[in-house]
Image (cartoon, rainbow, N blue to C red):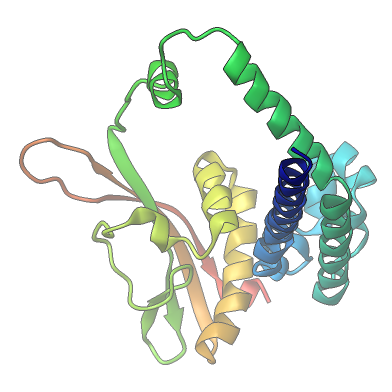
Length: 242
């Protein structure tokens, strides 16, 4: 019996160590994802400079330490610091998650059963509701050479529906931002255009003359074919944004 107890204790310690590592990695994933788009979403050169952020979200701007700095270097330091602190916190409090898992497991074994497995619960709560249309962004940019490229996706401009719409966004942050921007104001689109002008200069290694943004939708049909329907939201002369 004593040998079995020691074996169980060793397994629990190994499980706890694995849980702490997993929590730490998950916590680090957030700052790592944010670090990819620091300039676009956390600096004065991005889509929401500090002045615009303070005007739109005055309370949040007064509380956020990120709103105190506008340079990429300062934001990188803040994100790195947050990642280290989050990793330490995840390591220290990993035991809480392990204990909660044990309690939850006991609760499942002891508690009543309504006859539905977790998958059936999900299906019961969220019935299928297929969208009527798929949407994506196209941002044609005119380069000094006369070439037209997509300032968001890179590469040539294409109006055709991509095989996977999610892959047209550079990152999860861009996906969320552009999704929320669909009904945005002219000022918000202008800030996006100004950022794309500056970012495209660096990405394509030549001057960008103008940038446009189009919301493109294509109806989802069961039979037959449908055509993309672009809706132009703004056009910006990049010389006025520099």
